[in-house]
Image (cartoon, rainbow over all chains, first blue to last red; front, side, top):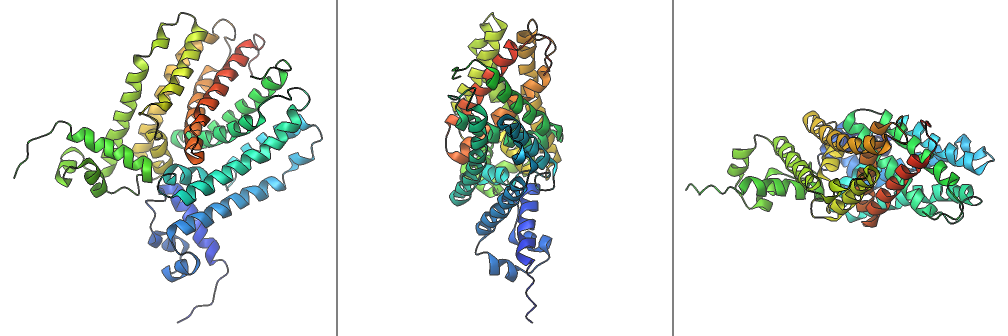
Length: 204
Length: 204
């Protein structure tokens, strides 16, 4: 018997993919388990996704979209001073890490770790998302460093932010200590500050 | 027919656990696949390990042991100046990341990411290994900071090293760009240097 289409079915499935992947890994998560968690039929799953990898791709897209949305409407963009805006970005990232989006871990980091070799499409997707984060921060770094340290390698500093964020989320999970994320991002902000205070023309 | 015991069987199995976990995740790795990779029988596997999780634990122990051994015999310990010794540690870590031990990724990071929620024993083991790394570095940080910045939070700085290392290994894999590790550790070393140059008594 055909059931009425529930527009939230796809969302429920993607939410289940995220939760289960963060809880026990993507490899340890079967389509059956995803359907059971989402309380939808296997037929529904395959209506939306041809394969489990396709569902991972869609879950990554949804996850990155939620983060983009959170950042797009964040208050720090209104700060006029470029250095304050930059500091605001890092602080806001720490807030987001405490929010429901990232509290249980980062789906991009988890899938990148697990599937980098096994699923090239997923790896590329993760890399593109990380790159997007780095690029959005690089703009703020360029503005903040323009006057004092115009030669600073802001691309490398932006990538260091993603490195610090992902490393901190991983170590926080291993230690069951969410303060690792805050502390690590504070160190990152402090590093930027020390770099800004360093001698002009110093390229290190 | 009973086969002669090969003392390398356990090693082969642990090597297969490591390689397969890094390639496609621990959840995506079956005991059959481990045995096939190691070219040993399933009976041999269960001779050494009661469960797959037990094999993960032993693989972590072996992995951490290889790193401990590499660090124990490293030349930087002979440097007399504490700040040079500290810099030597970070440089040596970058070298190890290029070596066969870590080239394909960090088993501790991979299992911590995937099994933090699903396998509490594995999570605790990973946390203990990360903690051991941080503690060994903290001693060097204490010596290097003793004169110039005795109030610096060396424990947090030591943890930041593990955060940076693990984040860098993850991002390097996602980007297929091993230079991320070197660059990130250079930034970490530069941060320490800027902290050492900062005003005495400054606790930030």
